[in-house]
Image (cartoon, rainbow, N blue to C red; front, side, top):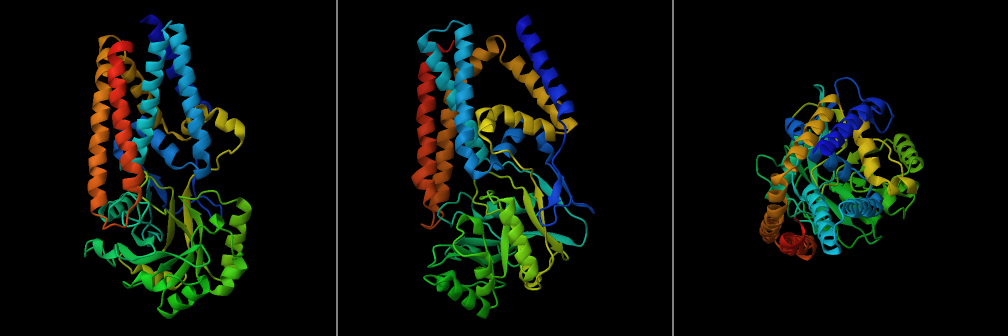
Length: 444
């Protein structure tokens, strides 16, 4: 018992010392100018974070990684987890069966944590704005896109809790979901749009001030779509140009594009050199520059807001038609992509967290460390180990049922829920049941 308490005290001292030594919080800044956001713009977190700090710390980390980071980061997390369990079992002189059971148990816990981050709507950072400014999102989806998890009501709630005043709904290749939003929300909080695939094998965002049939723009080239959209008083924005790089920026300008995304939460791999080029050509041609969530319901965090001068309740499309000077406010810092970073990914997670966490967050984390220490000492630990697997199996099964109900409401548009999400949840349910059976034999 004394050794455990001493270890906990040492860990608490490491947390406190690291928070002092490395504290250098990331700033909310304008991606266009690089300047820190001032004049009343600031980030706030929901009060519930105070009581759930470890969950928030990991969620924000996981949901703001570059997409290309996920594979090496996951490999690193699992490698370090298995290594830690092997070392623990070696010190405790556990046999092969007990060691396998503990590795299986630990891996399932980590998988479940990642699923929790992806599926649970835990509200993230909210942008607070001075009077006379509004924040918008011009690119988001609902369950009526083939690769989305969120219903229209969830999409609306997501934008409200994170400080967006209005947004466009841009499903893949159709506009059928706009009428699924409540009448009170339409043309006030949400406006009609579409992410339309072109014959050039890219896609563009069409933004409108009135409902339209997106299918009218199918099977057309980019230039044809732009011409038709402009004839119908629509704006055409190029999303995540760096995903394709098929046309040059100048070619897009010549075709009549109205603006560019310069940040996209789904594709954060835009290089600084390419960012500079997009900003320069947009300024030279009076084009809109926006940052978008491209929200698909995977996770519930954001780190970008497009802000411009306007009064609350003003029609979003009317504002954008005037090509206002935008701020693309980003709450994120550059992250290293070197190989060494991924070798030590769990430690890099701790570093990035501790350098940005304020005193209240660090204190909450320390309280959680002490609380978990109390829970996992003595007889309490046995009960937790015994009942966690069946509880998790039940949670996974219930989540699969909820996902299936959502899928049934999507009118056949959604594919990923039935082909990927539900099978993963049911698979985890079965694996947790297997852990439960092993638990009585080897995890004592």
